Length: 308
Image (tube, rainbow, N blue to C red; front, side):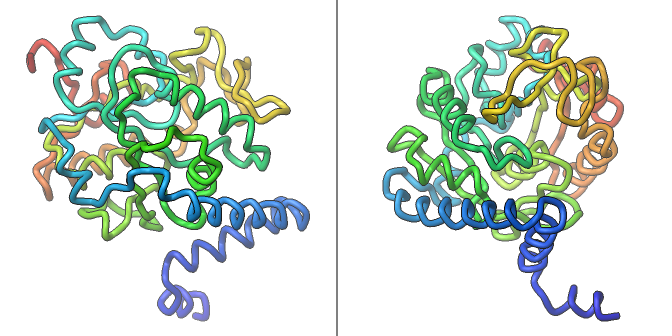
């Protein structure tokens, strides 16, 4: 009864904040709890002071930047290596939207890139942040990219890379709030953006809020834990410096040939539900480029030759 009353009286973001604080204290201990909070405060304060370094877009400016009714959203699956030059040329005629580690690619200019977190669970952040932003800043395919970043107090990584001035000055950025809890994709940025099972959810929800009528997922394979920039027999690990490195087993104990963590957590079912919801409620089509992707079980396959 008390728990249900608290859910009613306390806003969801406040409940999330309390849950995050208690979870860190319980699982990591007093020392890491103190370090984590110090990092949060430092990042938030620095981001506030550095905000004038970037061109912060309004929702209206972000939506007005669209140039097509179709957007291609890029994950980091190894199937990206199988996309043909003709297919890349076709996709370049539409809007392009990367998230997380798509920054390492050399195939296509990117209109939008979503950044949420760094190395999951790590308090050793600086080396990875510098490597990540160095790759982003030096990649010519991201010269005019709009960065879409989580934009709240708990957005530690986003606040760090902006606050420590690791992102190229004058970059166009848009910050979004998170819609806490399970549910369908939200209909507006004012409602927040649903995170749920991973950053793929953020990306699809942002695309829906921006008004694209056809969302195509590329490099979202889920049947394995391989990544496009790594050797085919490796997956992602983390070294003592906090940097991503090729490993035989990832941090969750999975081999490269084993299903991706988000697939194990229910991403395929969730994306099937989101596809049906977006089509029914907003007239938005959600499809997948890779016919072998596990998502092909729950949504149509996008055929480049049929859409040329």
